[in-house]
Amino acid sequence: MISKNARVLVVDDESDVLFAVKMLLKTEVKEVVTEKNPENLTSLLNKQNFDVIFLDMNYKSALNTGNEGFYWLNRILERDKEATVIMITAYGDIGTAVRSLKEGATDFIVKPWHNDKLLEALETALQKKAGKGKSNAGAPKTAGTLPGFDMLGESEAMQDVFHKIDKIAPTEANILILGENGTGKELVARALHQKSFRSAKPFITADLAAMSEGIFESELFGHKKGSFTDAKEDRVGRFEAASGGTLFLDEIGNISLPQQAKLLTALQNRQVIPLGSNAPIPIDIRLVSATNVPIYELAAKNQFRKDLIYRINTVEITLPPLRERGDDVLMLAKHFAGIYAERNHKPTPDFDPATFKKLKQHTWPGNIRELQHAVERAVILAEGNVLKPQDFSFSAMEQPVPVTGIPVMADGPLQLNEVEKTTILRVIERNNGNITKAAKELGITRTALYRRLEKHDI
Image 1: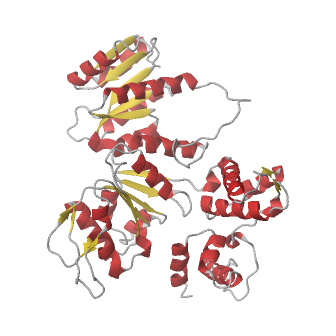
Image 2: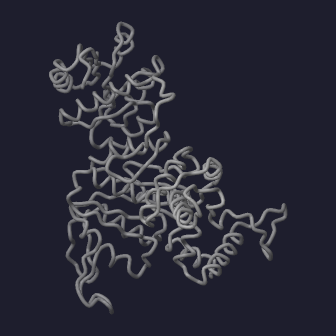
Image 3: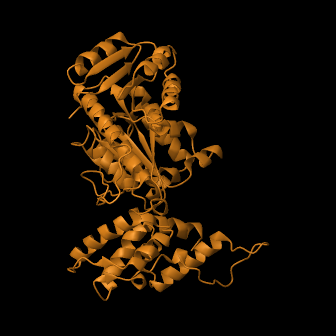
């Protein structure tokens, strides 16, 4: 419920926008002040306090850079760091608007908007403002979640991720998800789809790291019968299959430059041409991509096309590694313990305090996937109904096992590639050559393990 005592300031250079907002809010709040010229902001703020400020991102400039909006946002926050500011932006500036959240804005709305969305943004902002400064000491801690999805997190980093998903999902912006292996990139992609206007249409995934040069075009763009030796029938590509919905390109940072060129052409032209055909097929997709590689470093080395990066990342979402999420480790451990206890017909276990300490001290190179596997093993193998530190064994990648026969650099440290190769060989041997089990113990996917086998010529 919007507070009837709220005072709202709206700053926008379009008279129609100011009039529309004033008419919408005049019965919802105590006072609505409108202003076309941001130069008058300081004077207005000196005269009275506002509970919420709606601030446009572009004014006199012919270029919609959003720089004016950032300037005035910073001026407002310099004066009052607790000010509640909602940015107003056009659809094409969504990436800039998301950046404004990092600069201190509370939220943003995209014009033209639905009135209920503006009212919802105002209500949420007022609730946040009312909650600032209140102490939660002694209050029971509940799991922070993204409603409707199996994504948990109370850490500030994850709350930022949840907020971005909520804001970006209803748009048509292309999203690039960055993060280490096992941080939940596909979960985020699915959440973006399910919370979008395309949710009733297909969500199609493509693991680009698993596609060789020979099948890349066939898998993504489709092929016609007889277009190559094994093409015994027509096949619809992933782009066409995702029509009207979302296409998720996982591990996009691993594709070659020729593959990048083909992908860029399809995205630029918004059409694909199946192998063996000359007839282009229009595509209507929302693109979400993900990678765990430092894609900007690759671009700096001319190993990844910068123009493709511009195409795929209208907005970026960076997922934090588990080691940087504080007590989220414990929340997730309890969550997985409940799941695997039920699955294995056991009572939900408790955790020894020493176990929590051990879990928080571990660096989790395999992130959430590694934690999930560690908890599953612990639940299955534990003797009692309390998980002890000894019930948890971690990825062999983290074990300080002396390794013989590894070259030593002049100053003493082991060479990382040789350590990785030796560790992989030992884990595969321990699992009797079972790649699935070895990947699980290492806390990585089978595809990632196969890439490492190829890398080390194993």
